[in-house]
Image 1 (cartoon, rainbow, N blue to C red):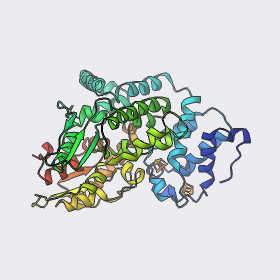
Image 2: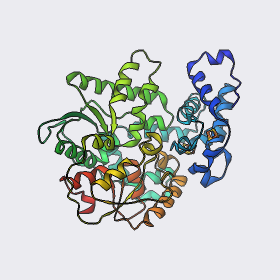
Image 3: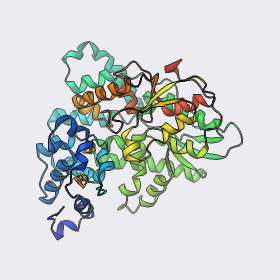
Image 4: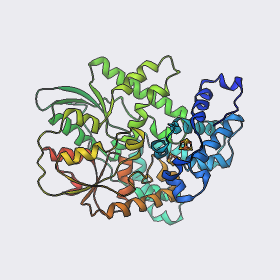
Length: 424
Ligand code: SF4
Ligand code: SF4
């Protein structure tokens, strides 16, 4: 694709990066066929190629974003299905980040929208605030039918709050072979601590000392999803500092991440901080240690399994793991190795609609995608659904009676750990 940036504009390294990405696109449109929003809405501007043009136009002319760019970039799920399909290797993810941060800098959203997004950013990354908000939101249930769609979407999710907390240090059950850190997350600490406990139990049973540093919280991915790049960077710096302090206490073999949405962002820290002299090296180190739990399990080995019954698992491949981290079907292979029957899901490359905060900010499209995903899952006659991302699990569970678990809960149970409550 030809570009028209001036020499002066290209002196800004971020614009130079965007220009390089734009030049790789040859307008072929292959990406459109696998873009969920294009499939649903059928508008060129709701597909990757259209969005690439919108970003190009806005950056080249160095003008403020308009409602058109905001509407179509907001509708992007950041699922990155387009990057898996693109034959030219267009780095859409980083181009979208440029586009969204330009919107954040130059476009003033309507007051209610600003308040809503500000509220999400102030509550979601903080487990205690999240729990308080979830408890008080119960008071609003009788008023639900009077609330705007986006607030109703939050109430509809209603995941049960966690009332347990993972220990800061869990020793290996046998002779320790590894020392690993667990990135326990932010929302996950409020509503998915059972996933952290299953991860720790699995690791400890497989001779890993596991640390969960209290100073390590949100990784910044939620703010990044909403285009709030300044907040995302501040939060990511705190996250990096937390791990560096832990590494100074003793060598870590890995930072284990069991929310794949976060993993995609953390593995990209080297890129995010490439121009920051204070954080570039530390960010690279943290990114290099980051491993999805499926990668850690694959390295450690599953060992003996005790699954003898035929349990049919529909494995939902989270976009962040599949398209973002390009981990492919590794979790499904691990489930098979552990003795489960794994059923493929039709259209497995299409997003379920969860996508960070997307199911809250774009509830209609997210709802349609969820229905489509559940229809494909239910066609497998699965006993249980498994994925590697809390956001997908909560979103899918809000539309089906089939239990939805994290992959590690099943692997842990199969190898002698606790049976997940959802299937007891
Ligand atoms: S597939 Fe790649 S090169 Fe083709 S239009 Fe899409 S982004 Fe551009
Ligand atoms: S990230 Fe997903 S929704 Fe966005 S353009 Fe690419 S395929 Fe479409």
